[in-house]
Image 1 (cartoon, rainbow, N blue to C red):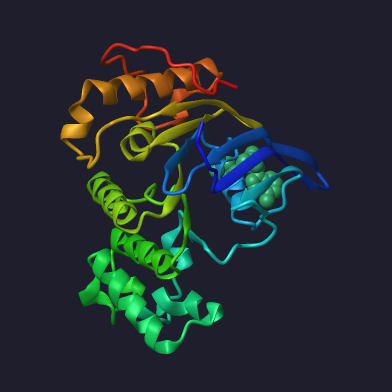
Image 2: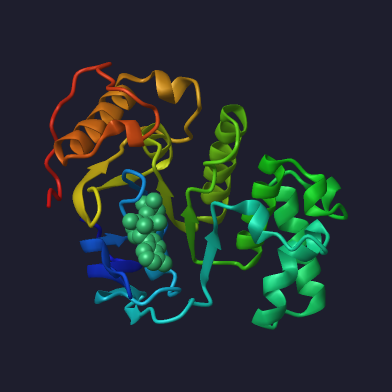
Length: 283
Ligand code: ADP
């Protein structure tokens, strides 16, 4: 368990109500995230990951329980929180150039024009897009647009970053590059990060801890600590026996919880390496 929590999710539940009936998405989820931690939430499609992230971001009111950020209840999007959505193209304003897309939310935050320009320059440099600042988003590839979305979130100077399956719709090579970019950014800025994915390998590669959610309505099945050395590398880290053990461990947890691994990437059981049980935080 973590020492001091930056983010605390306590007995959170969410049921969508409509004229057609109730859809319970989250049954009971509790966890904490310490300052500077990178935590991945992994679970099958439809288990309530996006719903959970929207509750964390103050975009959706929980039906029960609460979300605390630095001890304060989250009831609206907090000013020190950045959000990177899955659908990068829908999150771009097509009539604004890349640098203006990055600085757009800063106008609402009341950041002065000169500082906005500095932040755009710095964050676009960090994500390797300096030379595309005066392009329109639709002139960039999907992976580049997702880099813009990361730059925009960083320009907001968040203390905590929420990412909702941000690399799900790019090709495998680009996905690996974006994962490494995220790890660089995280190491550079030290920003506390909650990263939602349905990809087991991605969760183990990125995280300090993987929180495994059950099928809908979701609960926390288990928290798996990831002690892989940093900096991580797509080739050498994924060759480690410990990496294979952890991915097997996460996948077994999902299977045991009644999840279907065909909902998760990569598909099929992985039996590489010995699986040694860990029982931390089993819920
Ligand atoms: P995930 O991100 O894990 O794929 P979601 O959080 O998007 O899952 O959805 C969890 C469940 O809640 C699904 O069954 C989905 O159909 C339902 N759901 C999501 N949003 C709404 C909504 N606005 N109204 C009603 N049901 C919803």
